[in-house]
Length: 574
Image (tube, rainbow, N blue to C red; front, side):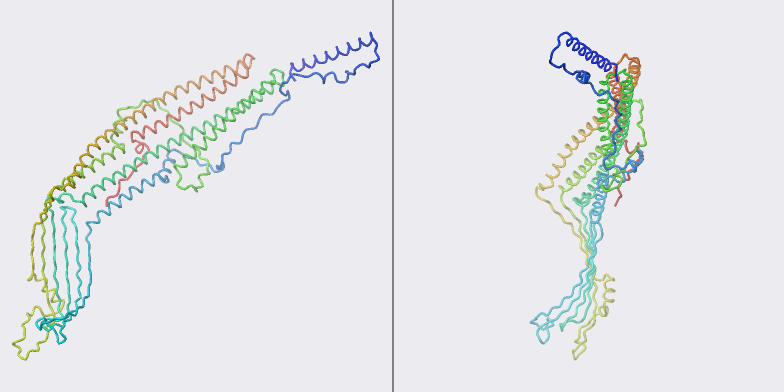
């Protein structure tokens, strides 16, 4: 019980005694039949005390439950920055999509090279015909018809050349014919020929044609998908770094808020002891309880920030939403670093202009435009193709027995034509019967508006790409400068917040001494404690922002892969 409450009780007792004395004296001087009111049993209960809080001691509120939804405290995963980056490179779905884009582009390029694969074709054919004839010279039989059975097998192979744009086709025709014609001297007979046809462009399509244009463009597209993959990889690594440091800050801030709450709980113990000793009024207890509730709310918010930061990091590292690691508690093992070394802006800008994937992509698009100009300019030229063919023929068969009474009247059949399919091929290989043809095919399109319009559009696109490249360079310049300024500002914030935290510690120590000798109030002491907690939070935030700014500068200069020892292999060649 405090001195103030004790004084109130003493005053109440004195008032009751005065009332009793006054009543007794009044009754002695003027007797009255009216009975004297009986006020002696409850003189103290009728006196009301002021409405102050209960003076009874109150226990310190327990620590709040910091269990997070869906997170098992028994499943703890220690994680370094390198481990986080490695897991993201292996499991991140956005990186996988970008990696598959490169693979698809590789297969498309490989498919375009298929136009230069040799093509083999064959169509075996059996043909039977019974035709009416009106002349005995046509070999008609007594029925007035001629019957022919022909089996044909003509395999061929054709191919386009990547160099020069030429093409060839080699055909091997084989025929076996059985006939009822009486005029035939060979039955059955075999006929074969080998034909080679070659075409070579001399002007249009010689240096570049549609197929070579598509292949060369697809090579640049493949390089662009590789640039996109590198850009996506750099972006994901930068996001992992930022998420990692956000989690580090969230956990440290949670501990900072917990420490602050423990200080408030200790204040509660101290206040209870002072109230019990009569040194403090019960009103100070309400002030401390309010402070405890406020710090508990800040601790809950900090705990929520831990879950948010942890889930952001898990999203970047985990591949499957059903992964059991979603319920794990991630504990970072790396601490924020700090270095006062200034950023060399010139080196940073040179590295960015040399390595940024976005600039590389626009450069590749300009190279595609050069290919378009070359192709469309070539299409405006006349078409002049050199064509040549060479054919050799073979023939052999079974001699038809002569039915003439006089053998001298029988037709003479050369001995080299008598035989089977083997003799046919033998005659073919001698090149004794052959055909050679050489020609120049000339095509002059009138006006040729399609090719001219395509060429004009490509020239306009060239100017457009030059402007796009300059715009991209400016964007890179701005990005690097902003990132460098962010690092510089973060460095200064770390220094300033560190000084602010040290000053807050000194202010709290001084306020505590004043409070201990009774020259300060509970309100001022609590305010100094809250200021120290905020200063520590600001210092942690400044350290986190500095490390995030360094990661962003690495991204802006495209140094992320080099700094983190990540090697991206070049696309496979078909």
